[in-house]
Amino acid sequence: MLVPCEVAVKSVIPAVRAYIAKELTQTYKMKQTEVAFLLGITQTAVSKYVSNVRGRAIKIDHAKEIQSLMDETASKIADKKISGSQLVLEVCSICEAVRRNGLMCALCERSDPSFRNGSCRICME
Image (cartoon, rainbow, N blue to C red; front, side, top):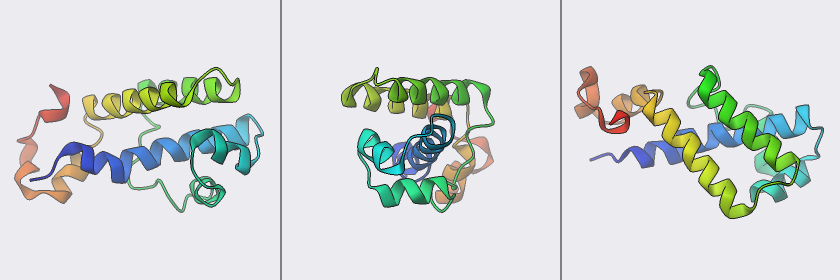
C-alpha cells in the first residue's frame, strides 16, 4: 500500500524547495548559504535545487494556485516574516494544494498499479 504522503516526500517537497530556492536566489538575490539556513537544508542541497539536479520529479509551478502559494512563501522568507514552524505549515499547505489539484496522481499511478485508471480519489476528497 502506498500512502500519498510517501510520494509527496519524494517528489512534491523537493519540487517546492527547488522553486522557493530558485526564487530566493534569483528574484531576491540571496546567497545559497542564506537560503540554506532559512530553509533548514544544506548549501549543497540549495545548489542542486537551483541547478535542477533535485526537485524535478514533478512539475507543479505551471498551476497558478500552486505558483502563487510558493511565491507568497518565498516573499515571506525573503522579508523574514515567517518562522520555522510557519514555514512547515506553508509547505504542508502547498503540498495539500498539489494533491487537491490532482498534480500528484501520475506519480502515484506509476508507484502503485492499484491506483491506475483514475480509481484513486484520496487526495482530492
